[in-house]
Figure 1 (tube, one colour):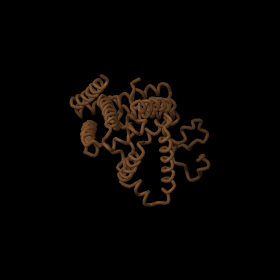
Figure 2: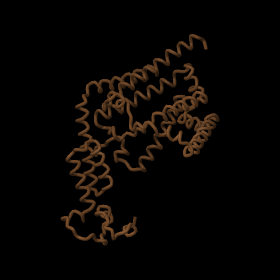
Figure 3: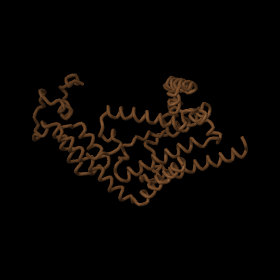
Figure 4: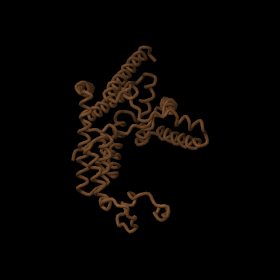
Length: 124
Length: 203
């Protein structure tokens, strides 16, 4: 009895797989990829609302892996970057870089160090 | 929140939760191995003489079920295929490693996974197998840096993330799925035929 149940179960599983494979076109797979991308973007936005920037960035990077040209994903990535580095959202000017920035995360975003700044000064 | 599998690489669960789940799934896997009879060398070694078809049947059932569930998950957008871990394919390393693996398995009746399940049920031969495995690994790592030939063997023919579909020139997961079904059931049929021949010969 157990053997028959196992065989029937296996046949049903394989049948489900074959039916799904035959009935799903490659176009549908591409559409599902877009849905996948939307899920990642929604999760990134939720994480952004909770100020969980690490998770938000992870989600949006996954979204861009699925669909690199997705405009909503690129826009959300920009929102995350701006939320992480509010100091850099000010209009760009050719002012000297301040060494007293309280935002440590802004440091990697700064322009390349001048010749007067050594790696030691930057804490590398 | 919409979940996307795999949960860890997609960013939906933390490292800690992932490790806890890995421990739980590992224990469940070991339990199932033991209940399916894989924690006994006497069940595994006869497979290579076509005297036991239980192991191939269980393996084929597991492979086919897993392949079907993954394919369904990808087709319906629940699994992110790009985030599923697929090890890099090093063609020559896998070929030579597979030969060594198969030789060890037919000699001892164990593979690394089943040996651990055997150790958990206090099988002495499984313990010796594991010690031999560790010794072999230590020896390999010891000579790796000194041997240029070995480094070439281990690192040449790097095909990257290589799937059946990619080998056949496609990006469609259904290609991998159908080939997996054909090969798995073909292998099982082959083993069952050879088992009948071996029985008829009265060996």
